[in-house]
Length: 483
Image (cartoon, rainbow, N blue to C red; front, side, top):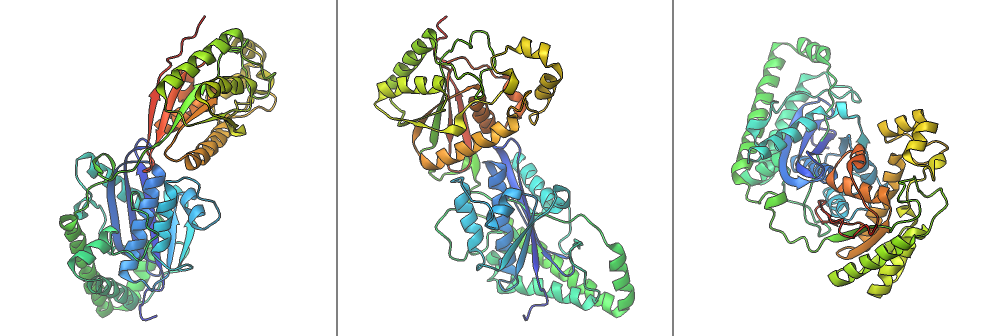
């Protein structure tokens, strides 16, 4: 290989202050042998989710590396387990918003040229800092620029997995290579693209670049190695390295400044003008009342599976009428438990639709608490109840499900149904915990927020899922309790 750079390390990260919320990404390209920073990219992307921002950062980092030298292999290091596993091919990409982003990332290099490695969050500080700088700039109503960066291009980022080269000539050659790559990339606008991750793209799968993720950086230091290299090299070698690295740093900083003035594309998020098409909307309906509902007893998937009471059947009929009057529901999916199937069937009879049953929409298994009131559980199992209220990982007595376990299966059902019913309105007839889980995930709220939500029997809510990864929540609670 004519280049002295044997491998690029791309570190990327992305963040969202709200998930979804104001989001940005950061990415850095590093010479794997010397640890020197060759390019940085960061951008505020408007309102997006963490995963969207992470993918956007990955794309930007890969494009920046490609602009420097498309022939050098790339090792991507990120603290996003999702992105690393999906891009490595070990996890299936189910979410419709992630598929086009993954396709864009995969299209930058030929197959086999890029490898992926997960690293802990604390070792991804460089990219994390860039992502936060981008979000801070967005908060000011600006886009990230070179002036926002707190690091000098050309700085060394020691990589613990790679032994650093000790010959100062390699550092000089690496700096010269960075300058040459920018110069050969095609003029001022291409140099700007190399610095911002918007380089001319290789053929892609046709997906639009809506989101990205940010890069990771290793925080370990090896100042002794740098000192030893300088001492062994002598004054003349030091001078050559200093001149080369200074020139490379100046060239790359100038490229980033060009990018700020040359950028023409509008910011994503609230300001985006692209038509994303109709969202996939879940109308969330809690089942009607059962004999256990008035006492607020625990009634999950491990209990007696009660049917609707007389009041519950009346609620189901009223709700079906309200849905028929609205005229928007195109499909019905129900939990397998009787109270939900009976509520769903009332709607299906009015709307002329079939009921599909999805097991992952079932209620939590409350173990030994099934059929007991909150007061009875507190009296019989006080320690277990306290632990359950304090931690989403705690299970009810007797081997029930934790909130974490319920969240995982409800999220799986959400992703699967959003993909299957893309652009349609679907009635999901389910239970308190799944409804609250879908709402709090859409809001980016913590698990404990579910204890602060009130959800009456036969209450309606809705979540609309958009193609950019955002979601919108509507709370109705419009069906009378009828007691």
